[in-house]
Structure formats: C-alpha cells, structure tokens
Amino acid sequence: MVKKSILSSLLIVLTFFVMVGCSGNNKEQEDKKVVEDFLRRYYSQLLFTPDEWVKVKTSVEQMTSDSDFKNIEFVSEFDDLLTETCLVRMGKNRLIPNFAMENPEIKMAELEDIEYLVLEEGKYKISYTLKLEEKNEEKKIANIIEVSVISINEKRLIDSIFGDFLWE
Image (cartoon, rainbow, N blue to C red; front, side, top):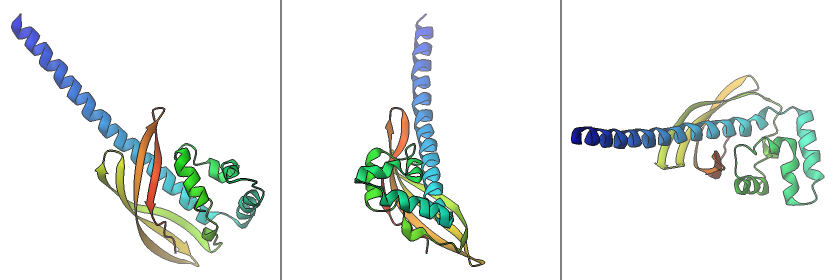
C-alpha cells in the first residue's frame, strides 16, 4: 500500500514537470509564429502597389486624431499580433504604415535565416535576413531586433520591439 502511494505521488510530480516543461516550449513556438507573422506583414509594405500607397496615404491624411490610425485597413492587420501599446507606438513613430518603404522597383521581399535567442521568458533577440529583388538585382540585408511577447486573454502578442527595420 505504501509503495502504491509513493509511486502515485512520483507519477503526479513527474506529470506536473512534464506539463510545465511542455507549456513553456509551446509559448516559445507561439511567440515565434507571432514574430514571423509580424515581420512578414511589416515588410509586405515594400510590395504595395502605387494604388495601395495612395489608399493608405489618403486614409492617413483623413485622420482627425492619432487614434484614428487604427482604422486604416493595413494597420488593422496588426491587431492580432501587437498589443494596443505597441501598435500605438509604431503608429506614432510612423513605422506602420511606413511611407519610406514606398518603392515600386522592389518586386520581391522575403525573410530568411530567422534565428531566435531567448533572453528570458517572452523576450528574444531575433536576427534575420531580408532578401529583396530590386531592378532585377537581388540583395540581402541583415537585421537584429529585440522583441517582448506577452499574454493577453490567453493570446500571445508583441508588446515591444527595439531595433531598426532595415530594407535599404
């Protein structure tokens, strides 16, 4: 009887550690997906057509307050990736949308070699290469950013981003 209770206790403890270990790895996988989705959406601005830029610029010009930028179609695509604080910060810093990315010569923009260094739970140093095709020439640009990801209503969202988004 004593052996069964000891064995049961050991199984419960072991199950607990396995579940805790797996849930941490799950968060990391969710964080990576959120970060990669963000980077792909962010750099998609490089591929906007002239008509898409006109639409975005018109929307920005019609804003009556800084909070109106969230109603811009392109900006609203980040609602499921960034916290409200991060989205507002990127809007005020004119990173979303980023008019400097308007370049009709760019025909392709892809992310390569994405690497994650875990700094602490939910904080990462991310290095990646942005591969561009411009005027029939291919170029690669290395980038490093730091990202903080948090949970809000059981959803992983980027709360802060530090670093430059280089593309030229």
